[in-house]
Amino acid sequence: MKKLVAEFIGTAWLVLGGCGAAVLAAGIPNIGIGLVGVSLAFGLTVLTGAYALGHISGAHFNPAVSLGLWAGGRFDKKELLPYIGAQVLGGALGAAILYLIVSSSQTFTGVGADMGAFATNFYNADVYGVNFGLVGALVTEIVMTFMFLIVILGATHKNASPGFGGMAIGLALTLIHLISIPVTNTSVNPARSTAVAIFAEANAMGQLWLFWVAPIVGALLAGVVYKFMSPEKEE
Figure: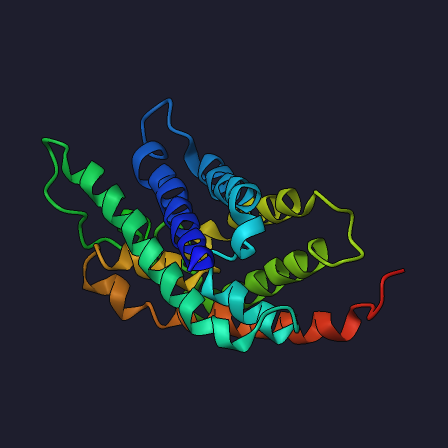
């Protein structure tokens, strides 16, 4: 139960910190943090969450991460569903807190139906000036999640330098956002995508399937590949 509480809190923090930065702080004229700031915010939530909660639950905060670790032989199959459930519920709490903050504004009239509203993920939409389409979104999410899991599996391997795993993982997520926000608003995390879609218009829910399928495919591939590459014994 302690592990599930840690995953619940950590995923809530990821959604509140990352999506909160996008919704509350990114678009303020002249002083907003922009896409670079949002990228850093997502990386910092994972970095801080990893060091705060990693010793309790492993700090997955992401169904794709749990599945990738399982595929890589690092996670028990019987814990998958409880972890994923805790992550989805924690993400929903983070999004609910963010919605409560946003809706307290006197000018609030709803999150709107625009693609990308409330930090939702999207494909086949011209949100940042370019429409990369379904294929571009699918490839991006698979490849970015694949590399995210490669970094996680490598940085947390028993032969890796101890104490630096959280930093490598947080920086990897920052880099992933710097690359892919214009394509999909960056998911690589089905719980994060689901959380904000709950509070958005129907468009986000209609496209949610991709942000479950692609990250899971990328994570499973990474788990298999890293398991093949990884040294079996400490050197």
